Length: 378
Image: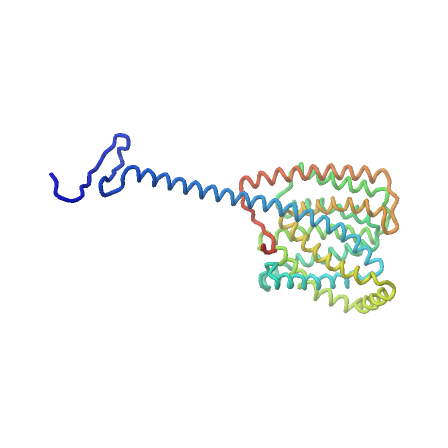
């Protein structure tokens, strides 16, 4: 029996024994089913959007890795000839390096003021952590500039191509990730090809050879430190460039003032300006490119690895060697040069294929990139 008003009836279904549906004043079975379907569709849409976002991040990370490596290689190739052209007529590497650090600092702050770069405020603790990086960077560059002055471009590149081997040895000694056998063999193939390319042009210069080999050792140490400081301590490429300039400039100024090089370099600039109007534009272009090269070096190492950066440098130096045979007086080539380029190319392609497969495997496990550029988007 019933009284006036709405009635509530429990309906039990043999197909859904645990369901309780309210009819006449509650939810109908059709409404509940639609609600469940709506929830499933919303969840599926969220998962698809998240998958698309992560795929976009993967492509962005891959693009940054390739772009940073290619840019570093191209800028470095051009920069080698610019450095040689300046130092031939203006042989003051410490003054040159001091100017380069000053230009780098100015560029970073200009980009930050324009909103084009992300740079955190300077901290004493961060500066202390980066002191080893700065030390090895500046000593590497100083020895490299000395080697450039003393050696021909092909010979200089031949000796500098030993850097990848030193990176492998350095990573093994500090207990880092030891490269695979295939990676090691591909790097050795690249280096052996480079050695063959310059074998017929080697002329002994003890000072130049010593400076180039010391630069290789310092550069390998420096690259490993940059990789570790960037990934473990949270510095981006622009911040590394700024700290490097600020920590280096006072030391370089003290050196050129104590040795009197600053006054000699200024007088030399006056002499060069009186002799040719092209010297000042060449010097300014070289300083700007030096700052760009430093940034590309940091960025390439952070987006890839120290070994990848040195391999890019090795491949770049092959073209530098070939061009070096025809500029600054020219160098007579031999059959070893062509055989060496072939060996180097094979090793470079081999290495690239191995690293590509490793990167694809790593991204399939962890598709979200961990490293970012210091430039702001938009």
